[in-house]
Image (tube, rainbow, N blue to C red; front, top):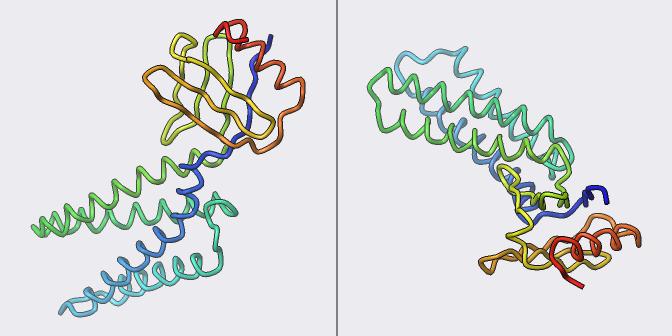
Length: 200
């Protein structure tokens, strides 16, 4: 009995894909606000201002042109997310060096939040799988998948289009499958259940 990996539709992954566009829009808005505030400073640099405006416009074009950026253009999405992290981290550091602590710490916190988002979005480069092994079950999650040993699994209910895994502690994980199960795959799941869960 070999391991079995089933591609699934994970609700958290889908929410993150839908939220990606709004988060780029928020970053572009913050960069534009920073550019406008820099314009009002007495010794504003036209080169720095031009770079800020160029970056904000690029992000807005990305948002308008790609409605489902995270799903359709994952590498482009990650590149712009990295640019946003570097921007917020750079501004935060510059503000802290100028003793503007609240603004600086605020930008650094935004950079850390976007760095966490980058880590989660990077996971979406690969399709999410529920995998059954001889040692247990791998469950997809953000930012990292986690592993249930068979002793922590109460039962598995598999149908041709979905799978539900009931774990100890009244936790249940339900996933729709990307592809309907083949008869052999369904039989293999039942074999795992009979062998490790004593489930008929």
